[in-house]
Image (cartoon, rainbow, N blue to C red; front, side):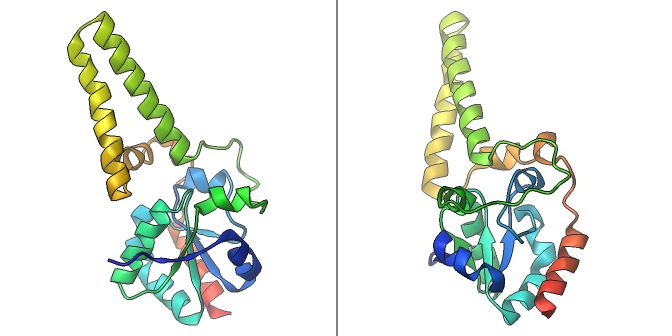
Length: 194
């Protein structure tokens, strides 16, 4: 399967007023800061939004965004498989902010959630360290924890998918509020009607 179309942050910023931007991160990540005007449709709810995304894509360009670009690439592939042409923001919101562009935070946000990439690095590092320490202090079999995480990281790099991120996304701190998909889809319909 071919790679999705990419738009760099400079191009996206220049065209932001004419793009429909869909952020496929968790509600917690989205609340921590997103591209201005982006609509939050978490990756695990994308199927439910297909008809409205299709309508938006028929009326103009749709840009899909996540933290680093990996989840948005996956979303673009899912959408392409359903006949919907979209593009992904190269480097995600990390590249957006590195380019000096502002992000929007809902006024109701009380605290920022770590990015999924940071959560994965922290969790993987903690489990590897724990496996090494327990392997030395308790039983060598605990080294298998470290080996398992190493294998998972290799698979993640080869497949550009992260099982640990999928698990972490389900934790309560990554869902401080349930994504109000109905309200988001209503906003998407309003954007598409312009």
